[in-house]
Length: 291
Image (cartoon, rainbow, N blue to C red; front, side, top):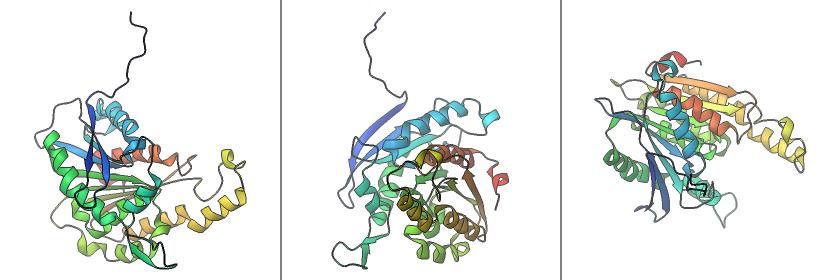
């Protein structure tokens, strides 16, 4: 018996570092293949933002339930994580840049300049998705995009700009406050951009129940009144719910809004991903429409 510690790894998964040909940034691309053989049309694919923080938990959540698909409603899928090239869970500066259409001008107060969302979109569509298709047979009609917080805002911008590019859009605790006027303006005209003659697109928005207040374990935070005021001004729950109601006016679109009991902004990520996997990977997801 070997009692020495051994490296821990995730079977069927690997990671590579790539440099974006569009802005030179370095990213870690994580890929996990299903245990089951592919269906005739290929596997569904889940594209996951902030993968440094959430890739392994997402893969295990999916695999646990895909083994009993008839009971869980979750089909085996390829998971493709997009993360920044850091050993930390997040590269805060990079994600603020990459997930935003516009960012504050560094030298002109009140002015805004282009963020990195356009370059990230080209990286995902022109580099990451073709790379995944070379790794395994993937059904091009069954792609899902999942993001949390600022990443959730990016997911919504993808839905609103070109809803044909993914089948499912999972926005977990999206930072609607960061780009609210544009999001609402685009949501009002979304019907005109929804693809016709294809299965309906799916849009899920989730938020934690404690996103606009303090959770019991947060009352001892430094300066809790300031934290509470910031949360109330951002109105994460109310703005997300309002946008979900606006999206519900677009047809054909399957819309679901979930408020996650007992969760705060950070913990909503893993729970929201769990909800999103069923929404994206169950063929009967139309019955989950609740708006």
